[in-house]
Length: 175
Picture (cartoon, rainbow, N blue to C red):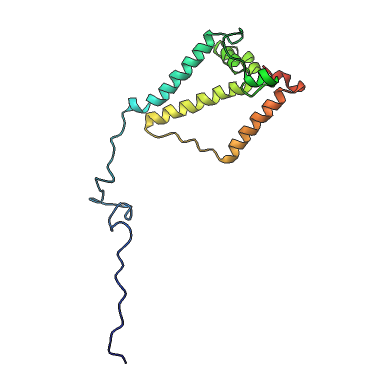
């Protein structure tokens, strides 16, 4: 037997935060919150929480008010769609202003005839905006997490709408 003891490995300092730190101890406990790194911001007031949804609503209402007063059916008020002007093809947005004008004046049939996708968009906007406002009042963020497949379906539907409205049998969808 060799009387010399075996060398001990050097001490390795621990990696990560010390025990009891909120990162390693999720239960935390009293005195584990570090005021320098985990400071709690004061909760925003209800008026501040609803400011963004109300500002968006004001902007949309102003845009609709303008389109409601300045008739897009009269030439010279709005620029012509560049795709329609240079190719004669209706894009998915063609007829959107006429649709908004008819929608504001309560003529849903004409609005659907000018641009059915826009009318669906108005309804979707209204539902999402109401959800946003309710969550803002509750102090919860609005998260819209659609799977990638849904975005592809919506994009495909817009492409199909655009193609069909430019074909002879889809002339009812053309503005």
